[in-house]
Length: 154
Picture 1 (cartoon, rainbow, N blue to C red):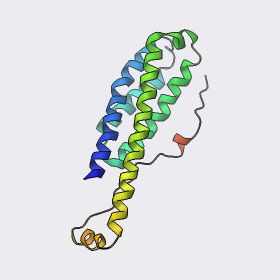
Picture 2 (cartoon, rainbow, N blue to C red):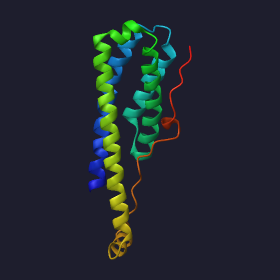
Picture 3 (cartoon, rainbow, N blue to C red):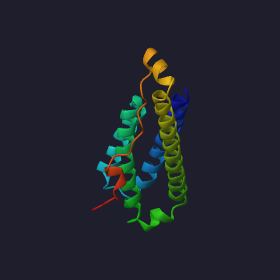
Picture 4 (cartoon, helix red, strand yellow):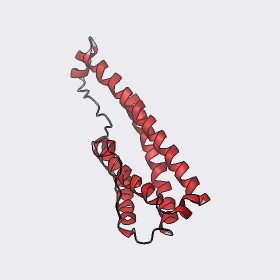
């Protein structure tokens, strides 16, 4: 099914993101030692994303992790040496690239879900869908918090 294939592309990018996060955290930790709470939150949310099951749970955990990653990037703004670090710049580029790939995979998945759900409702597919108990697929949705700008206070 195309919906499953499209969702697996989101999973691939989320896995890539979770693989990059420990490197980002370790790089920023050296400069921002007093931000322990944020690092612990990132580690917890990373683990939650790795163990999340299903579209809804993955979307929820992904949204939470996105917010926390924005906080780490905002912290970096207060550390000029960190912003100039080659390692941090490369990690920031990788994270940014991954976020773009996640956005594209989400868009592709949601388009595939829309096509699938539409096909379930048209004649004659509607009869076969009911007969074989096909259900509409869930969209991978962003929450309201993900749409808001990041606010970091020290």
